[in-house]
Length: 254
Image (cartoon, rainbow, N blue to C red):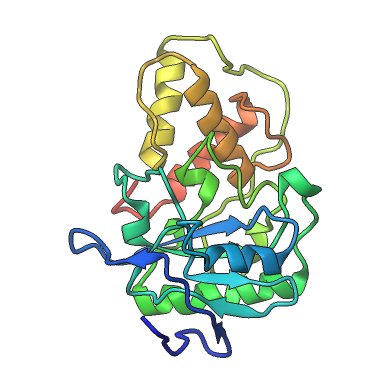
């Protein structure tokens, strides 16, 4: 592919060679948000377009709000890696990947600039309209790869996206005392927690044992939906927020 016209109004184009066809007739019906996790956006953009990296994304959004498209939306970019959501393991084949320039946890993890978030909102709105992406399928990389990834992280302003009609969110239940579940526990309450997380979409086995995988999934849930405290402990606030989210799902999914 020598070039293409941008599918997002006003976006630039820098073609990445790292892409392929979507598999098994899958189409993009989800958006996965990432942060670049590199010290500079220029370095991240170069890496996403370097054949040696074997990674790519459909779009990258700079701190100043500039949007660059690197892979056509019809094609399969290599952004999600080993991941799953609602029983689908090939997330790359069913999603559009957006890299948001931010050095991430390894390099200080600054706040996301407002103009950058405004650009992300506009980009997500256009993609959602073109592909019929449901709000609950605008997800974090950490949602589809808990434990392995933590981007775009607890500082990402999901509430700003939700206020603009992007994504699925509820007001988190307040943090307060009460019963909680944590690593090493087992029994029906843990099984119920795992079942609720799986029902929402997370890739988690229902074992009734609060193992390291369960802790990682709880952390991923907290990063997105209860970011005030990300500790992997299923406290009352976490469980109540999960209940609220499940209740707010469309009838076809709840």
